[in-house]
Image (cartoon, rainbow, N blue to C red):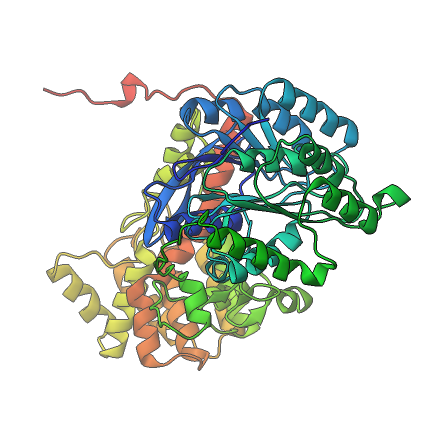
Length: 590
């Protein structure tokens, strides 16, 4: 066990098992005390590494995270305190590992219920190797104005009230963490405050005793008097009695023992033994404050305690969330979302709870209508969306998107890489013509252009009519997908004026060439115009915006992703080797 001071204003700790709040409280205490460096050097989170962002005053800092105790000790050789927030199941093993590190001197064990056999092994090893254990079942300890462990002393308001931001003259030790906070307040009211306070922990076998810390305090020049508070259920006060009897303590000790089990351990017996050994013992717990005050004032009168200069601690910046909730600040948001909200008991799509979506048997088309269009479209509309997704899901392995995904999968790349390589080919010549088809058909129809005027006008501009033309399909070999979409629209849509206009355009283009047939892009583009205008749920401005933004291209991207994923899985399932294009399929020229 150490014989003097174990903390200072430069003490740094390693924190085991990441807990945001107690670490932030340590850093706030550091700032309050005017420390130049944070007291937490590193965090140990088994199996993890990287950084955790926290605040040191106004400044945001990144504290390193290490996967093992050994790695943390190697990275931070000057950190000599280990704060263990492990559960009682793993606290013993991690504490023993820490005790065996040559750079660590103090181990604080927060967990309650550490098995007694494990606690005894830890205590034995610590004493044999001149290490200090605080706990188990402890809130830790504090050296005023210098360093504190975890949640010791509670909130910043309590710390300021107890004047722990600067050192006083009193050394305090207790078994109880909860009573420690009360005594910090008491001592601050009637003395110049705490120099160091320790809660040794409430378990049956504490790693260090009341007398261990009193003997330390006796060797610290800044500590002028000590206060000791026992706890129900223990007899640790008698170790202090022996130390007093043997003359090992030369400074005044104010003590109060608490009732335990047997007659020897009653509060009355403990307090009488402490009094006989030379401690200052009040007649009751209620009188403890006045006895502390009298003892302190006597030391001041004798000139043993010089006045402690008061300082004004800096204000701790409030966290933004706390300040917002209290109405002290207004903070602008960085992202606007109008389609979904996951803050309640269940996610909502456009205000519709997830349970409602499931209970009402909504399909993919309904979800798309909520997330894309922010409203529940009629069933015929959402079913049309689903038909479009199904019909566009794949078009064989030879189109550019599928080819790219296949080649990428055969190169050994992952699913996302293979999917994205296929999606990147979507554009004006592959899939992306849906938007343009809708845009041009709408403009021509709304302006009252005859089909031949539209087609010839596009020709003069050097623009091919989007949605018209196919490399395989023709007048005599129509695209079955187009026929299915047209059949569904005739049966369910209240109006198909845009589709009929597109058919008239097709009639004119077929007079020019046999392959200038309406393709699936043209069918979807024109029919989506009929869906938007015929449903009566969209304004003209909304329809123009939907076409301009690229909603319909998004439909193709969504649909074709299904097929591209399928081709990726297909190649991996077949264990196909790296693809290399055959020489005979390349025209080499000079």
